[in-house]
Image 1 (cartoon, rainbow, N blue to C red):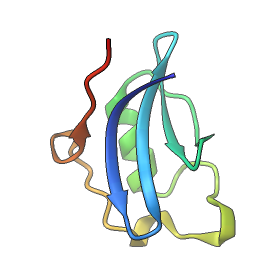
Image 2: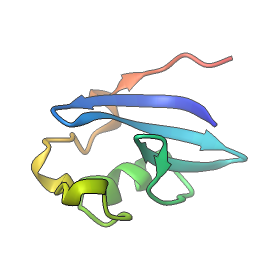
Image 3: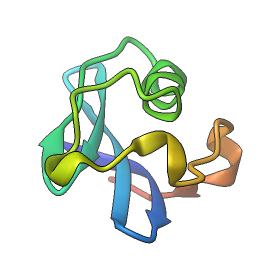
Amino acid sequence: MKKLYAYKTKVGVFYIMEREGRFHPVFQEQSLGIYLTPQQAVDDLVGGRTISLPGGIDITTLGIPPDLGDWERRVTS
């Protein structure tokens, strides 16, 4: 998978990654879902509507921004 976006939180870095035209929010190398657009991945991540995080971490309390413009853009080749 290609890392497209990254956002660092107090519990670690979240990524939006692309594989075969689908977008995955990823935490600790675990895909938290599969989406048609990177924005849909972020929307569900921010809203806490993804696969549960290890350790019972509540995603909605981490301050992850809903706007991809606030995420770090990763350059991929």
